[in-house]
Length: 417
Ligand code: NAD
Image (cartoon, rainbow, N blue to C red):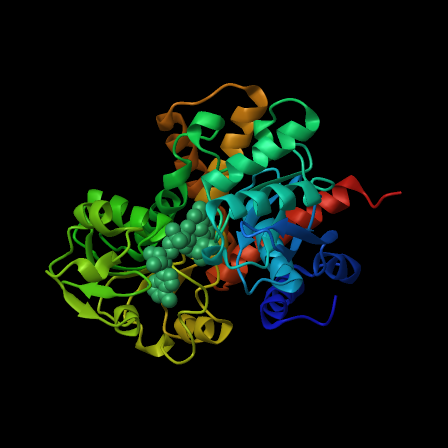
């Protein structure tokens, strides 16, 4: 592995800050700045026209001190092994902050899924699953969906591994359809968890969420669900966007209705004509109490950070705020609830899914949501305490908790042999 791409460098810089504040042993710091295992696979897929296409994929396992590794599989043309490593490292900290018994992993295949037919996508998923089967498994490393993959892809992977072992093994992946051992509440979990994090932060800021103005970037699984739940709880969503269009109404948008009609649909929010259309950059700078970036990374940057008017930012997406923007927001007293805490709801309910699969005993949705709520509030409280104790920002506090739990586990286990 080379010296690192910007995203891997960013993950390593964050680790270095936490390591310094924790006075972490330098050898352990070096170990944690690299993945435990990184598998690179090259494999062929026969396309519908009979041609053979070559694909490269990865499965990176960052750390196993606290349990098997867990992390999504991304199908995207821009992935590489270093980005996959950074994402695996963040998964380690995220699982440790939520105090669920996993280390972090991530998988990816360099592919533009828009260019594949459904049958080609299925063949690619099944062949990739077979290639990484030497490192995944319900006791060792449990993948889940990420960008470019979904419940259907997880179903194919589960079936592929089951065919190879000779019996059905639902616990090998999470994010499956409920009919195949998926969990009730998993689809909504990340957005739901974001709203719990927002409620906890609002308490500390003395912000009344009833009637509060909220802006959400992204109208998919995370942003759409977070907006819907916030509306149900009395907040006013004044702005929301998808990849094509952002809309604004200072009196609030009818989110439940918009979600049904436009989320994930062809024309998207641009089809809705009863609100003012604005650009995505204007959306981020709207006057509001809370901003939830829930689309893609690097949206709040040094260019727009000082124009953000929200008092509270809850990171639904992974990595929406750049380190320079973090400094500027922190100087102005804007509270940023970091991704590894705010969007942990997804991996928390994936953990519940895995537990249900291993026991073959399935929970009611209420039970899932109550336990998600409990873990999110406890994780928030742990991070908040660390933030006050070390007089630092919330991202650093969350990283410190994650790094400390992982390094404590390593030290307690002892260094083999
Ligand atoms: P999604 O594909 O369901 O939705 C993404 C939304 O963002 C869509 O509405 C899309 O139109 C919009 N979007 C894309 N590009 C945009 C742009 N340039 N500007 C504005 N909007 C844009 O994806 P998702 O599952 O909601 O994931 C969103 C983010 O949350 C990602 O960063 C993902 O890694 C992160 N995340 C997701 C989960 C999960 O469980 N789904 C868990 C943790 C983190």
